[in-house]
Amino acid sequence: MFLDALAGHCRDQPDKVAIQFVNGPPITYGELQATVNGAAHDLLSLGINPGDRVAVQLPKCMAFIYLHLAAAQIGAIFLPLNPAYPMTELRYFLADSRARILFAERQKQPEIEAIVPELPALESLVFVDLAESWEERVDSRSSEWSAPLPTDPDQTAMMLYTSGTTSRPKGALISHGNLTANIRALHEAWGWRKNDVLLHVLPIFHVHGLVVALHGALHAGASIFALPAFEAAAALELLCSRQFSVFMGVPTMHRRLHQQAGGRQFDLSFMRLMTSGSDRLPDDLFFGYQKTFNVTLLERYGMTETGMNLSNPLLGERRVGSVGKPLPGVSARIVDPATDSLLPDGDVGEVQIKGAHVFTGYWRQPELTAAAFTADGWLRTGDMGLREPDGYYTLKGRAKDLIITGGLNVYPPEVELVLLEHPAVAACAVIGCPDFEWGEQVVAAIVPREGAAADEAEICAFCRERLAPYKVPRRVIFVDAFPANALGKIQKAKLRQSLCSES
Ligand code: MCA
Image (cartoon, rainbow, N blue to C red; front, side, top):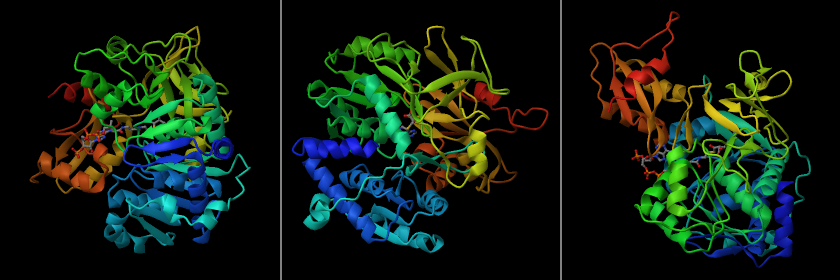
């Protein structure tokens, strides 16, 4: 299981640094294990049982990591939540997940206490002072105690919310077996080793930062140096210090690093592995990186429901525009999404995935779970792509209207539902427009209600109170009507054509 390898490293190399945050002390594998044990003991003392949802809405910090590993250790379900979620979103996730306990920042106490009466399943609230040392917080008795690690691969380890095309966000259940399969595949494919040092700049409430990066390094017994948030100047300086061998980012981060270079050249070819994922890597950035940093980025493809699926090779051709081949243990195919029948190489169809890494289902959503799979058990990713005759896959857009901005997924209906609550909005459509830095930006087209006064700033402020900042439209365009098909359905492709070019 994914915790077993970590337990082994804690035993075999207790004095080696596991994780150090830029603003904190180095934490050795021995200290990591002791504090995780203590946190696990605390969770049990608070009445948390296997299968209970442990929600954590904290910034990127050691406490988050301890709680994640502790919850997994006792068989509870870890539910990480973006610290930028406003209360309306937080309330939804806590209510839907029926979380039994929430760990949150002390400064959010008044706002969170105000929503607690609406959350009957939430029995405990723990407010965390970020300055507090968790290594000192656990007493020595509990740190020596240790829970038997989960042995059932089907046991759920964590729950990650992903948005739906038509529904509210749904909790994807990721089992211990899924995590183990994923991490083993990545280790084999990317050659993770003990002497790797990862510069960790990603958020840790998503698969990319948590599973691919953090689990990746800990599974290998490697060391992590973490920034609480990505900052291009600091990251470039650190990369140039030659202390690191692995770096992972989303295209927006790579874009900012490339811009930070400001036309100068930096030889980062000593880096063993620099990856890009969560959104398509633009071709100009792939080549720009080669020229500026003497590095060929390794692009890979994953999703919340599966972790990583496809990857360009560590050794061999990293093909521009391609996401590579299936990882070890992963099966992929391209089908006609209407019939699920296999398409020949070169034809564009839906990418479908199978393997031990594929999630077990959506929390309390049997219909949505069933709809996510074909009759013979392939996961419908909703991503379109093609397979080349030599086995490389290339993504070619999405079957759904999903927007990816800065590596984060935004589903238009989530934003549209909020816009429709605004009294001045008669109808609306949210689309993604191409953007050099962000990949896409969220744009809202609105038909105003007759006689109502609304302006862009007011609409955005309204959204900001109800949605995480990355979901808030960057532009609001008022229109008289929408292009619609014969059934009255808004034709978003046409809307994108007419609105995305407008500045
Ligand atoms: C921040 N803002 C954003 C985003 N992030 N707006 C749109 N899209 C975003 N992704 C908002 C801020 O709230 C702020 O809004 C304004 O943009 C400018 O903020 P700035 O300081 O420039 O941004 P930042 O805080 O530096 O964040 C940019 C970022 C961040 C570092 C690229 O978005 C990020 O960490 N992205 C990585 C996401 C990630 O890990 N995705 C993996 C998902 P305002 O001015 O209104 O306050 S997992 C996944 O996709 C699958 C499984 C996979 O394959 O990996």
